[in-house]
Image (cartoon, rainbow, N blue to C red; front, side):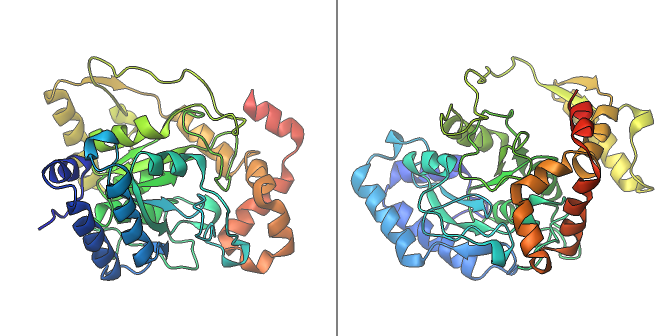
Length: 349
């Protein structure tokens, strides 16, 4: 009987006892996806026979599970990330194309033994933080279907929180990976820009985009990052030497009391204060942070000249297929036209 959450540690322990258990895990993943109560999590699924075949081939080429860091670990990817054989839609059917090769990060994960199960839903063109801007439906929070999942990596977060896969890739430009992870009580890891290749990713803001990781724990997210990271000469934004050792002591950034805005939700305010106290009790150094720069940057991304970079990414498509673009997304992108090149440089500086 598999646990509800398919953590990497639990699966490694299972495979150490019986490598052939990967076949059972694949069957469990297929069954869970097939019977999931939320039909909006996935946009496309790897065919059952293909996933079974890949698990069997993994057993043959690497019979010792300890030989590969992600041996037999099932995962999903946001549907703005390429996987050979599956359409990339960015949650816009008219935009869809079928890539001939995997995105660099997907290729690295597969080489490490991970098994791709499918591609997840998102706010169209990764534009949004609520998870509702998709013609494929709106994934729901795992705690209450009346709540939004958060976005734009909505399906990725819900797939992990529902126990359908061990981890999932999203993207994160303005919170698209961390927001849905938080809303579904899992870990959302946003690497430093350039640490993980964005080759094979439909860009939102190419100069700021990051591939993010949704996982059940910080340990799982780190295990995936150690495989995913690394310089890629095919990605002009990739950087060398970004890997940093883990700090010897945990430091947690919190908002000062006067900057905590919960829009009248007293329960949320109390939980935030409680979480900060709990972190301190666990030995973390609590550091108060000024949130104003984050608010300023957020406005640049959704109200300012960085909209122009989003428009450049898919601008030709918006002009020729305006009726196929979500209305809110289209209005945001069209707003880029009011900004000048001088505005963009002023914002960058």
